[in-house]
Image (cartoon, rainbow, N blue to C red):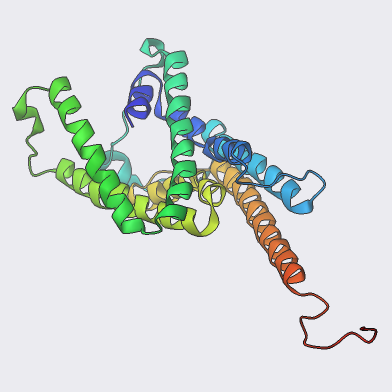
Length: 267
């Protein structure tokens, strides 16, 4: 989290969004390295997962880097009343260091998915694991935050949008989302959960258009279609791989004597 926030400060939110879409690729490579994913290049399921991952990454990059003409214009009432975005000056930002910090942050996120999958095999209790996870994060970050900001008046929350942001981040951004991710990792594995990471860019575009009245551009629509296609390709590959595993297990358990019949030639 520290690397991610510092990367946004040195780079830009656009750079952070682009690098965050690399999480499925990082997770897939780590899962193959730790032998959690089977890679058979002649298998259609493996080809679908690889092509789908690359396609979803391409769709996310199209959303970030290609704008295009407006498809849905923003309402007139939001242009003057809503101004929440503050662009960062690219001339004063260090894009190289910011990009490296973002890459390290999302590489650590991918490692977190891998570790969580192993933890769930040993102790498959999502709520208990996430409780101790958040407790450990709080105990580790508290002294660091006090050293970084010793002025206690800066920690005071005034009744404003900041209170809503803190409550939402604590309840949904950390506790609820982490529990859902851990539950998904236990059921389907780390690659299945990580492949949904680029869809957050599409969700941001839709929510911004609905609640903030921002315009929807052609690049967002094209990127969403490409990203969805890649996502379904990966899901199809995972489903076919699970079906093949189930068929193999059924064939291994069923033998010539499984039906209870006696062979014709028996001494």
